[in-house]
Amino acid sequence: MVVVGLGGIYVEVLREVTLRLAPLGREEARAAILGARWSPLLRGARGRKPHDVNALADVLHRVSRLAAELELESLDLNPVMVGDEGRGVAIADFRIMK
Image 1 (tube, rainbow, N blue to C red):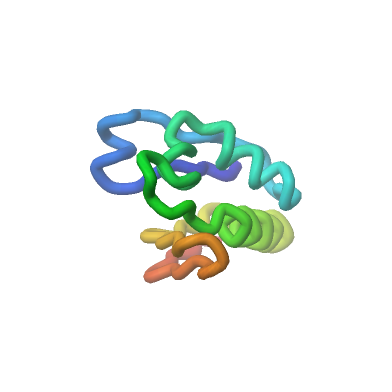
Image 2 (cartoon, rainbow, N blue to C red; image 1 turned 120 degrees about the vertical axis):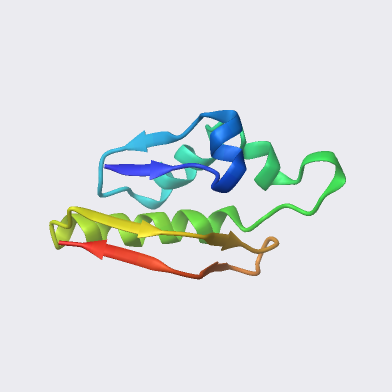
């Protein structure tokens, strides 16, 4: 299972995450992101620069494949920081449970 959502206070306030079965294709990962109520925050709401949704979708695709292939119990990436469009994604910490 892949859980996609905003972290920190946002997940507590918005109470929304997107659930998908692993592994995700790139387009399925992108659709999971863009289909969420909070996706306008990544797409450049209120005149802000759009974030790199393609890089985030690629990370979801790759990580979900890894988790499925290795039959992991859990793989947690937190925080995942999405840069401006074309700038990629940074992952500060991760935890794997086999």
